[in-house]
Length: 436
Image 1 (tube, rainbow, N blue to C red):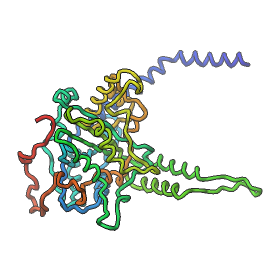
Image 2 (image 1 turned 120 degrees about the vertical axis):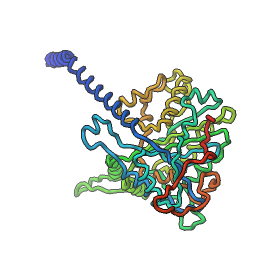
Image 3 (image 1 turned 90 degrees about the vertical axis):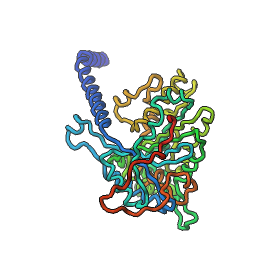
Image 4 (image 1 turned 30 degrees about the vertical axis):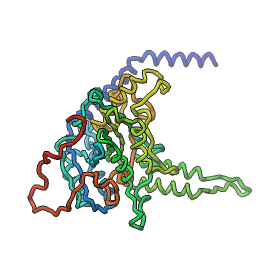
């Protein structure tokens, strides 16, 4: 019997090996498909025309982040998706994304929105509907072009950089603390969630620059199914079965904390979500560059959204621009740092949203930084409109760094119908940067 079984196994292996050409055919077809989709989608993305908008707020803005939540609701409604097979497989159409950016040039803070040109008017309408006093201007020159295109060129000018991405400590089913946790009835006790970040961006010297981008792409409801499974797992964990003389009895024992966690998750999935990537760069003169501020400055500002029972942000240590000999894979530490700097600097300039496909990751490989690690795959996650409005919204009048933010110095009334609202950018309003 054993001999017959061995013969069967050998026969099956021989048959599989004899059809090597068939398996090779299927592998080549799958690889060709993946390569074609990567090319078509990259071509589609490069065909998108972008505009850079700057938001300038009045000094007495009293709108809470609730208003920005409604703006993100409107942005989610602009989601596009391929309708026919030609749109997806030939044109390579993918959902377009938006880039929310907070930038500090030596302590001077700017709020930017980079949006597809076709969505510009809809984005402006969504913001003006909830922030009628905000001034939105189209920036003629993208500020990132004020910096050299390559890391080597940046360092040749006497600067150095640190870059990283922030990821979630748990599954995106668990929400972070949102602005609802910062609100109070008494006006004098009101807190603005973005205040800590702006104060940090203010405390830098003229030779330092901090750039934060929050890439958001409207997503469908598929992420909610995974979140619902998390809730079901928590429910099962709380159930206990006891066997009695009359049969099995099931008891449900939940602590108040567990009840709050389940309520928070269900509240989280009750609102639209965005695929999100948070990435930042710290570029400074070598004389004033400090690794401590680079690593912990921005991160500490995002730590105010942490909830130990729910979720929080943490460093993506597989992506940050530092490495040592004792870090895996234990070879070429200097080359790894160089490649990581090149990767994150290039991704920031491109406003690149992480790809899901194997080929997309393959095309992003560097010599000593392949980018296939588990944590790198978690760099993209889902935040809902409430969470995004918490970390990105126009600062209110209670923010102490108000005088250092580009603001509207006087409230403006609406112009007559048909009159152009904004003219050309004045010559005295040139963007700062490394290149002069």
